[in-house]
Length: 145
Image: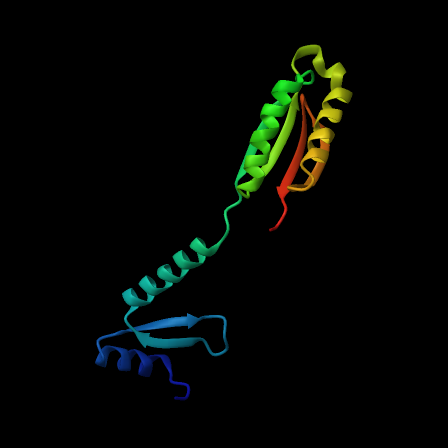
């Protein structure tokens, strides 16, 4: 079609009762197209919406333990962890240290490592247990099927 000057392009757009839309302004010379601008914006939003719906959303589920969580509670929470990982959600397991229970941080780490070991066939550890303030946090991601 060749390169037209701006005035000529605007005249052509007016003749067709359409708009002159700048497609890529950074190109030398800028690329313009004669079209219905409202339709162009609608199509663009439609494309963006389709891209968003295809993007995967990361769900993070949390499980909280105490440093002295007993076996029954541990097993109960482990069942939830198994369900979360099977559903494809990431797991944030943490031990919360209340008051002076921070002296049991070794027990908290052992608890989280035990959980990671028992769930190794379902999920892989993304972040090893790490103490952040009064919490020791560990992340597990589901293994791909």
